[in-house]
Length: 159
Image 1 (cartoon, rainbow, N blue to C red):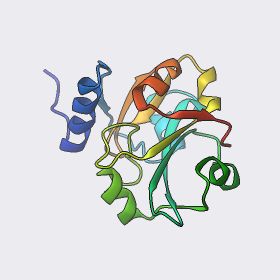
Image 2 (cartoon, rainbow, N blue to C red):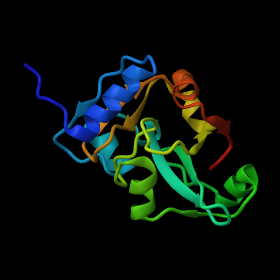
Image 3 (spheres, one colour):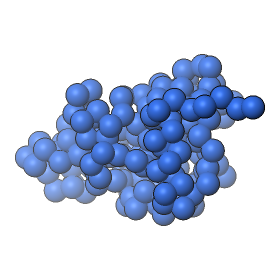
């Protein structure tokens, strides 16, 4: 018998199912809050972690989600050009308000408010990638080819 998912992880599982994907959300005993912790807990390379970073438009206040490879840093100048306004990394309150999830567990889907989404092109080179699933202990595995379909995000050179 499998243990029931926490409410946040179950929300992600339900969101995945609602958009037609049958990935299994897994809750792990170890932390997956950072890309390094996630890779260690899963047993994959850090580059295979699809980390979700929420930004906020400085003029509009809109949420912008970047799904980046675990080793990459988002270049805010490139992001600013893509969204046509200056951006800042969102604070914890904004992240929770916009996504419904805490930093360290933000998934690529199932947000309270739909952000504009950008996908780091470097993620497309791997056979499988892992993303957060609502908590700092929950993840799910999928193929990079499905990431754009899953999120509706735009692939870009963002690192």
